[in-house]
Image 1 (cartoon, one colour):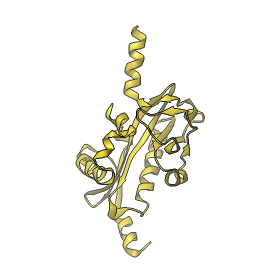
Image 2 (image 1 turned 90 degrees about the horizontal axis):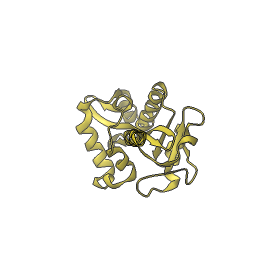
Image 3 (image 1 turned 180 degrees about the horizontal axis):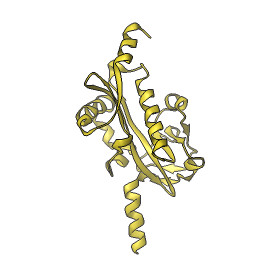
Image 4 (image 1 turned 30 degrees about the horizontal axis):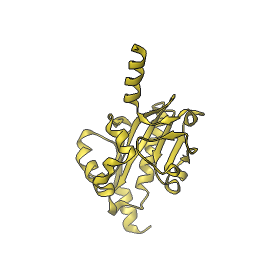
Length: 184
């Protein structure tokens, strides 16, 4: 790591996400993932309800958002968890550890909030050192095709990842379905 990189890291602050950050977060996500991101399985789940702003964070350099991570409540069968993502970092700030720091902050916040587990669609070489493990093939499914090797889970409460079974949906959809079933 160069001296310039150390300067960047010294200037970067990590903050809870606020509505004022939304335009910059969208710009970072657009740059990182492009317009095709809206057809991905994880985005389909996220579109079904709001993310948890209290568990979502940004990295800022001065007043500029340079990275962000969001958490969304999900359900799969009897299991409940948070879905981490998207995680995006501006190109000039990549490979400095900012993304990993944001994930660590989000996982700590999830644990403090009582979340039983966190799952994501991502690369095991990146997320494995942060405590994520590949989910067993066939345990969960997504609303659109996903490489099963990219379905990863981080267990906070013992046994919580095993309770995730079946199709993943936004937790709000699961509550609505349970309410309708109870009325039938």
